[in-house]
Image (cartoon, rainbow, N blue to C red; front, side):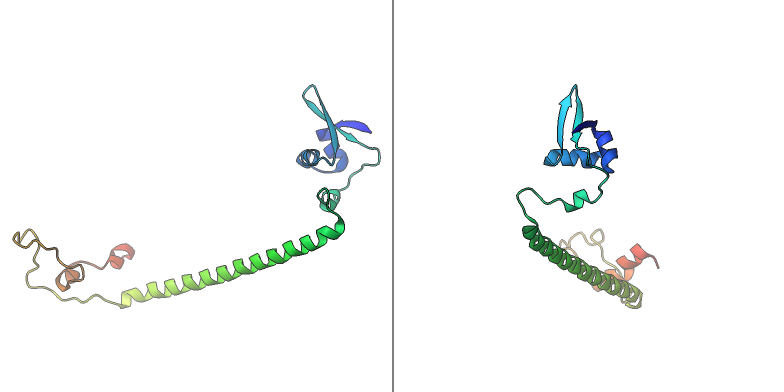
Length: 152
């Protein structure tokens, strides 16, 4: 067993220093700390092995136990991806419908009935109840909200 710094061990294994630290925290590599420097112990047969992390199985689990778990996770991933695609399609359809409705708004004109004398609260102080927002005389005098927002 030879002793290397984390950076040297990462270079020897062909992985990043973060991957070496992850292996140290999982306990798959042995290390010691001296004077604030972490040294990793590597045997002479350890060389650049990029597949090592991919092939590791959590401690206490055999290959036969990990295969059903992997297939279950893949099935769940496919299901979630399918759900995501369905939501994207639904969202796209909703945007299309909204755009079509917004295009039709200018075709729906508000009635242009002009009132003889529009009555306001200032003109009739004895009238205390508010006027209806859907009342006929005020709609003709004001521009519709969609014209104020979108212009036209």
